[in-house]
Every structure is written in structure tokens, then in C-alpha cells.
Image (cartoon, rainbow, N blue to C red; front, side, top):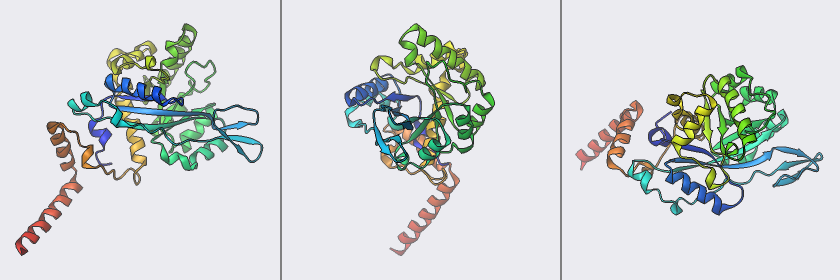
Length: 315
């Protein structure tokens, strides 16, 4: 894959700011994340259960034939970046990127198929799934090309698949990232205990956090922590301090690159405009030098130079 924006300019990602319908609150959380130093922010639209029996009360639903109800997948949240102050990021050669994310709970193979072929799916940058059990996790390990993140109810006492290390490793080997969020741990001691227990089990199953990201899962500004503070939360799960940064940096980067590659032809080509280059001239020069190291690009430049030379001789 050619060098992408995330690949060149990425530093820290807040992978889960939850949009609950209040646009002002969501914008306030994005502003806080930017001030804290995140240059990639993911806005999460969580629709809950993908399919529900009659009698349920999901926030957004549409009647479906066969006596069931299906949650309507809304359009991604649109963030107006002109309302954000990104001057500190730009001064450090960074550029803010906003990603959209859809999260849903999957309980059976029918829902996997429904989500996989849903027309709204292509509108989102990242797709996250909460598998109800290890059978769904097994299915995602084989048919999860459309999934970027696997998550769970952080304070739940019944996440039965967290100790299924072999299946989890299959998912990670296929490029899927697992997520721990810390917002629930900030609420009360009982939830904190369950968040820590579940997180420790996941890190054991992933051999120390390989393929795991830590995000806020914030619904309020107060729930967001700065990048290094968020990374250091991993120490509470048993991670050594020297290994903490990857949970908001390199592991998050892999998930974002997977999302970007899906928008290209088999991850082969990613086109960016000149506006995507950083404003800092030194950093811009470094980016151009990286591009010039791509053999195909250098060859194309030689072809263009030769054609320009021929046109000049004619004139």
C-alpha cells in the first residue's frame, strides 16, 4: 500500500467518542480531544443490537418483515472541522483527521450477513462489533474482513469469550483490533472492578496487548483523558509502563490503516490532495521525500520529465 495520510502524520488516536444525539456535546468532546493532543479522533455511532424481537425499545428502529425489528443504521456524524482550533497540531506538523465509526451488537450469523451487506456500511470509516458469544467471535475470525474493531460491554460480568485466546489470536492475525474503553471505570468502584477484570483477561489472551487499543468510550467531556494518561491506564491492566504507548499509538494506527485500505482497490492505491500535506515546510519536505522513495512514483516522474523535455525541444 502506498504511503497514506495516517501512515505519514499519525501520532495519537482517540478511537471512541460516542455520539449520543447531542451535537453540541459531541463537538465539545472533539475540541477537548484536540486540545489534549489527539490528531486522529473517531466519532462512534452505537446502534446497539443489530436485530431485535418485537417488544424491544431500541432508540432507532424500523419494522421488518417476519415479526422482527431492525435498527436503522443512520448516516455518520458530520463534524465541521472549521469550528475546531487545530493550530497547535499544525504547529507540530500534524493535521487533524476525523473518522466515523459504527458499533453494533451481533448475536447470530444472520445478523453478521445483514451487517456485512448493509448499504449504509460503506459510509463509515470503521466498523466495530460486540459479539454476543464465542461462536460469533469464531465467525468473525473467518468472515470478518468488513470488521475493524471487536469490543464488548466493558463492565459486564458475562463476556464469555475473553478467555478464548486462540480465536482472539485468529482475529488479530486477520487484522482485527480489540478495544478496551475506560469511561465506565471512572463512574463507580463496582464498574471499575469489572472493567479491570475484563481488561486484564483480554490482555492475557492477546499476549500483553498485541492488537488492542485503549479508548475513552466517552459520552461526556470529563470522561476523556490525554494520550499519555490514557496509555498509562493500561498499567492498571498489568502492562509494563514502557509498553503503554502502543495502545493509543501504533495499535490504533494499524486499525486506521486497515480502515483506509478498505476504501481502495484491495488496499493498493490511496489518493490524497495537496491540501493533505502538512503546512510545516520541513515536515512537508519529509513527506515528499518519502513519496519519492516509491519506485513506481519515481518511474512515473521520469516519464513525465521526458515528455516535458520533448515538448520543450519542439517549441
